[in-house]
Each structure stands twice: as structure tokens, then as C-alpha cells.
Amino acid sequence: MHAKATVPTKRSNSIGSKRRLRFLMIFVLCFMSWAAVNIWGQFAKLQEKSSVVANMEQQLVEAKKLKEQTTKEIARLHNDEYLDQIIRRDFHYSKTGETPLSVSKSQ
Image (cartoon, rainbow, N blue to C red):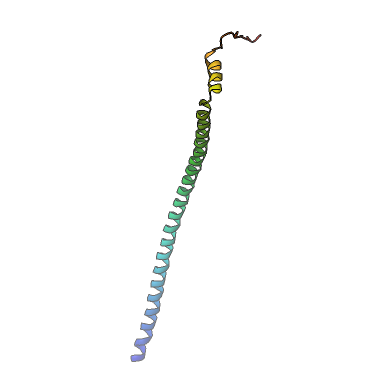
């Protein structure tokens, strides 16, 4: 009688191990699905942030160019000849003895 009891026990251990293995596989599959969804979402956020960074870098380049132009203009404003040119051009001043000429466009 003792031999008959060991056979069903061995078979029930086999069924239990298959059940545990199936549960483990389902758990791993769920975990991998969750990880894939999170990675996909973070990839989309990364693409958005990359475009924002590229836009900001472009704005930085433009701001540096503007700063450079402004610095050059400030340096040029310390020159008296350049100031004379600006005053003549913008405010239509002329030196004493000069005759200003006006040219009109013909139609």
C-alpha cells in the first residue's frame, strides 16, 4: 500500500510545479508588458524634450549673434566719424556750407 501513495504525490507535485510555472510566466509577461508601455511613453517624452532642446539651442545661437552685433555697434558708436554718419543719415543734418540734395523717384 505504501507504493501506491507515492505515485499520486509525485503526480500532484508535477501538476503543482506546472501551475507555479504558468503563474510565473503570466507574471513575467505582465511585467514585461508594463515595462514596454513605460519605455514607449518615455521615448515619446524624450522626443518632445529633444525638439525643445534643439529649439532652445537655435534661439541661443540667434541671441549670441544679436549680442555680437550689438557689441560691435556699441564699439562703433565710440567713433566720432560713425556718429557723424548716423546723425547725417537719420536726422538730415549737414555741415555749414553744404547744400543738401533731395532726389525724388520718378514714376
